[in-house]
Image 1 (cartoon, rainbow, N blue to C red):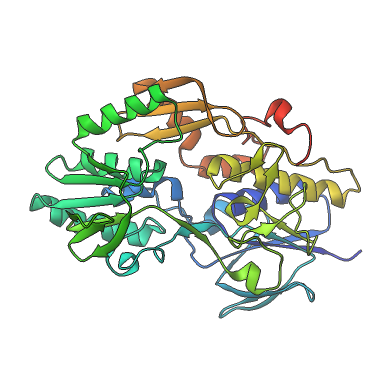
Image 2 (cartoon, rainbow, N blue to C red):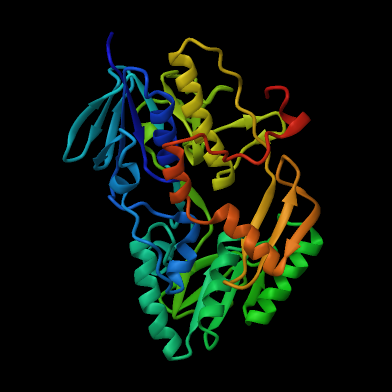
Length: 390
């Protein structure tokens, strides 16, 4: 019997879960699994705003997390894929052959959409950049300076709140073309705004950023918002690797998948997380950890079922909540319908802090537990709204 070789590209939240879960699911089969990542450190992307504010996170190493799972770790950049020959080319390492590929290369903040953002703004794309930002932030705070956070989505709100709480003397301005927390219901959003007021976060709402300068942010009406530091949290881009390798992608570069998360052009490639254009009956999933981890678990389980000759049911997913931290002592949770529109219920204060820590804390303990047992990572399959395929 020929060994079945599976390669996972990307060791973020989704790639790590997929590799570890698949290893456990296939431990009695003749399967080899390798995971490829440029860094040896596991990055907790959901908590980069804490690093930016000067907090320290655990230094989790991918090799240590994988220990005992049987998954091989290959450190390096995937530079190209030959889907016909089933090979991945790794910079400085060589070539990996695969029978099946799990494509888990996530997304990053897009600084190319506004002039000056790439040159003068910081992002939360990786821990090293976030740590360097925190060092500059401490200097700016000592001088009672100014910080502009561009983007009123959940990442921007969390970053602005975290920075303002950590450095009360700073002048923090949140700049957004839409109301911060616009996806939430009125009551949850009102609570969010009261929390930002309490923390002293100023808002510039309804303003598009047209340029980022070394010491200011220029708005569409010509106003200049003073900023000794600018943090850019808006806009998303994915790796061009899939499109460049001839794998069918959509206009944004996401791999187009069938209802079982297999590439429509190359069925032996499974795309998960931010890398996949996943449609449900209610619409297309947008990239979050809430949706990404279920795609990873599903891919692992479906590959294991296929290898055993079993039927694979279509992937089903529905959103359940929008958790937002407002510093270390406050949070708001908007519970949602399957399509991520706000529902009737929300949670605030200390109870919301405990809830968010439970669902958005470090995934490392869950990864380690997944070596021994099946860990649930999905809160909702969408109910009636996903019982038919799109």
